Image 1: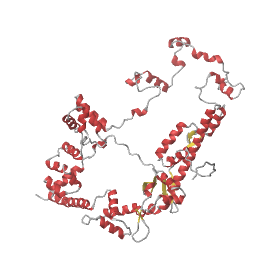
Image 2 (image 1 turned 90 degrees about the vertical axis):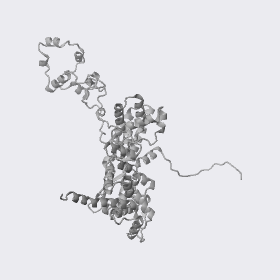
Image 3 (image 1 turned 30 degrees about the horizontal axis):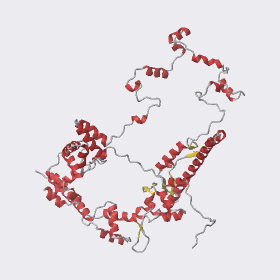
Image 4 (image 1 turned 180 degrees about the vertical axis):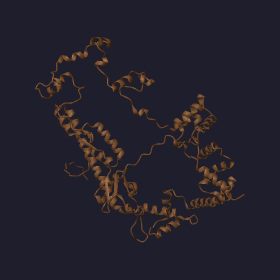
Length: 546
């Protein structure tokens, strides 16, 4: 086969991802908080972009203004045609303005006594002060009450920063460092203590293995253990523990409840997690009533004491879409206007600039700013329309959920919604990310309504995975303590309800909902039943006559 060179014309189509198109795609998947941050950055960078509420008409050329601080003496008499400028310069008295009349402002009039001798009267008679001005002058002449009023670091040309006076939230490390400065005096011990404090996690635990700490600090393991023992006496109780058992033991010692029986219970927390009451009773050497009291005391302890300090604030979910019942029995879907950024393009400012700009670089810059501002306004409008379109289709597909509840949630995927609104699946996926819908049944993420389908046992309509999980929870919540449902029994109950599901799927859904197995549920409910039965007997024994 011979290799030759030749020229050919070919016509083809290809998708070119421009920066603006990539940015528009990115806007779809942003949450309302991220979108607000993005718009704020654009408002700072683009001079032609204004907020809708702040977009005011520019002042008309030649219109009088009340701000005279920016006007010099030439501005008053600069109008040669006797128009608005000359009228403004005349003022309200009708006297003509003399250029030399302002020289008295720069004259030295002397001291207060000299002025009073010249006027032959007191200053208070010539320029009487208003009550408010007198009070302000008295406050100004008063002696400063604090050091900061003498011109300390709090005052500056930029004014006070109000955020500096807001009380900051105390972190766990700061709390421990304050106690470390009081508990230890030796510099070496303080250095070890600060190193260990830096290792404490958010829950208040130290790493289980501190073997390399002594080597890094150049000290002995005994010295590190001694400092750890001091740190474990800090507030809150249970801090700086290396395991859950040690954390609970510290708190029990603080309460003076760490007896041998409680120590045996703490050393066998794995049996407590399995609800093996028989083995725990033998190891602790107590009866059922004492063991129940000991377990109750442990439940009142804090397994993560470090979370009391410096915990992050929970951000309230702001819905992007509201769904309300309509007057005709349907549903009204509307966007949350508070989450939609309101920006406009300042066309009048651009038209004024285009008349005065002469440099090519400035013209190119402002042309790009106008193009970016126009694109952003259109992209935000398209984003809002797309969210509303997708949310409306979700409400239409899941009408049973809004009417009857989660048991009537239908299986739904991205392709069904994309085909209905004639969009691509990736667009629907981006729109439903980080978006929330407020309904009469609560606030849900848009992705909540997309669930997998579970086949029907009788060949009818498929069931959604969320509805099946809800059915499993209802079955477990309604079981009797003497008749605990196993996973196989749950499969049979679901098959009777028309849901075809495997046993491993039931186990997977149960573990995802953090529901223990049938063995652990039987032990829990039997122990609760035994405690409920013994409580009346104890009360009757206390009230019996002597």
